[in-house]
Amino acid sequence: MLTENVLLNRAQALDHREREILESAIAHTQTYTAGQVVVRQGMPVGHSTLLVKGLVTRHVDAADGRRHLVALHIPGDFVDLHAYALKKLDHDVAALTDITVAVFPHAALEEIQAADARLTRRLWFLTLLDAAMHRQWIFRLASLNAVQRVAHFLCETNARLMAIGASDGRSFSLPMTQNDIGEVCSLTNVHVSRVLRELREANLCSVRAAQVDIIDLGGLVTKAVFEPAYLFLNPQIATRALSAEQPNDR
Image 1 (cartoon, one colour):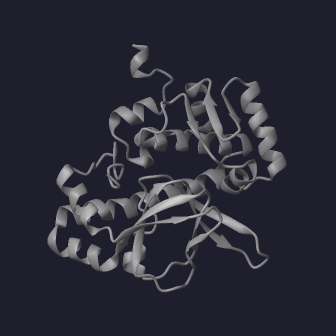
Image 2 (tube, rainbow, N blue to C red; image 1 turned 30 degrees about the vertical axis):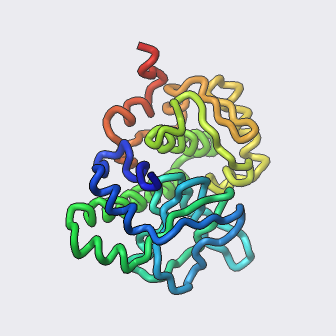
Image 3 (cartoon, rainbow, N blue to C red; image 1 turned 135 degrees about the vertical axis):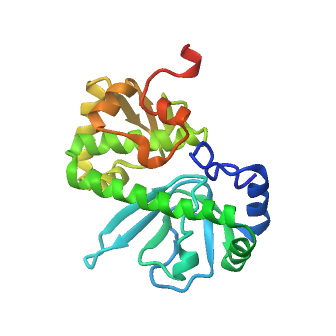
């Protein structure tokens, strides 16, 4: 099902009935190729999108043309649910990789709001979760050094992917270039290369060819000063996001 990963392994998970309601609200699915803009800044928008496959960024373009990433979305994320209330965005939403999205007309979301207060609160939770993650994004850039920023981003991504079954806590696919990681962490491509080498030589993790292999999750978490409470994961996933011990290790 398209919506089975929405709030999967979160503190407030959707039940089967709620997922069916969301399924029925989907108008269609749509694909975009890497680099395409999904929602243009300042343009009127009458729908919101749920990411089914691939990676999506939210970014703001500076006057000099440079792109500044302000969020990264993974499958299962309701990318621009806040557009339901705002009707236009103050930033672009774009495909970082080839993507598939499910399109929810705002009229359908309006019907859900009128008919189901509990599900409405679940959707509101998603917008609050986005805000929590954005605050952590600001903290990462403002308070952490280069190595800590990259380590924190990798820990966060690992935790988020664990929540949708796309990481086992030891390895996961990350189809991002060093330049992409640099934009996330506000570092140059050269600096990212040095940081990744340092993390590899410290036997914490290896990032090569769109693949992240975690050698010492506990050590990486410590290096990153990472605490996953802001992701509102269920207790089991939150614990696994901090420890190298996995269920099949016991």
